[in-house]
Length: 137
Image 1 (cartoon, rainbow, N blue to C red):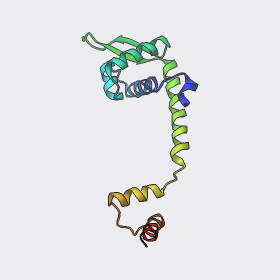
Image 2 (image 1 turned 180 degrees about the horizontal axis):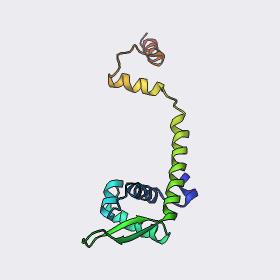
Image 3 (image 1 turned 180 degrees about the vertical axis):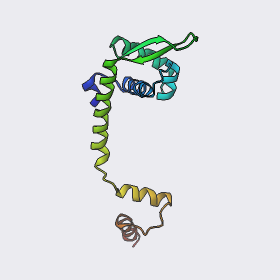
């Protein structure tokens, strides 16, 4: 897995990159807001935040205003690691999904099965029809 290279689990990566996104928005989230945004369970988020704090990637700070709430902040080291990890994941995605090219025969088959195409059946469909005819005959 690409994330092992940077020492992150999948959940650590998801939370760190989402926190990086909040940082870009100039809006430090509460742990609950981060959990909701990353679609990660709150208990799991709390545990992972502790790990990220120990690694020096995240800090907890007093929230702005008079409210007594804690918000999360990404450290400079966390920003660098989030950027590096995101680049690694994007490269892996490109390698995997890039193999299909811009147009995939699988997409044609799925569209035909779903009945969402007005096009004539492609060669893969013709082969399947011939195979059925041969089996019947």
